[in-house]
Image 1: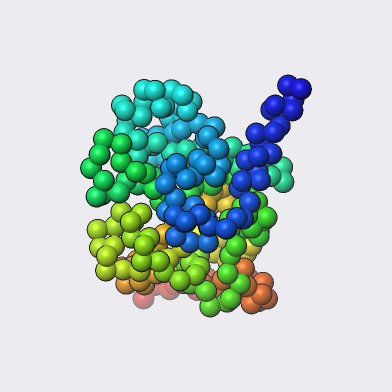
Image 2: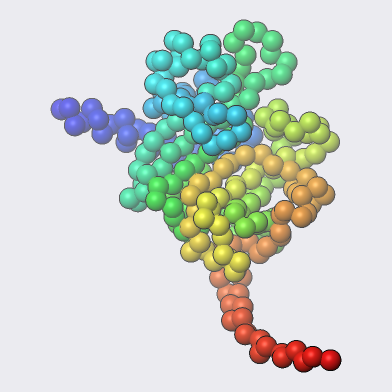
Length: 254
């Protein structure tokens, strides 16, 4: 019976992390962004741990839910705690972490927390093409013209219409002048090849609300537009020719 008690919570979590109709508070088809912390925990159950980030670095300290609720939440502040859920799919360890933002109009001692970021980590890293099977919430667009951008470290995919309500979960100062759309950003810690393929390995991905306008107007130097990796046209691209080695030209003295 002990083994049953261990397996059942994981099965329940796996069932919860399948595509479901978005809760009333969710702004996009992912079903998470915009949920309150209470709504998220009602959907997924209690988190396996809570972590807080050290400054802007990806350095975290992990707490049990009991320790966080009884002590550290008051010390660190509630919005700095990310709810963490661990599971395994297809032989890959997957960690979901949910970041929160407070309602700026809520001035109570316990303000409502809203999900504004879903951070999903893979161990070991997985190819881009495998991510839809590992993350049911990720249903990428297949149109070749879908807004997709890349750098040497990440691929950013936008999907669906913008949501005016999503401004609530955005920290950007100019958020009221911009439209905010569901965005999937996949990161490769070892870098992405110049000729990108769907076999490129990804360590983690983020689900968030980002602005296509901001990318095109303010981030042109860091965001290179590319063909959608999940389109048929991407797979049929011709490979670039191999680099040719130039014959050195001798220099003569005058």
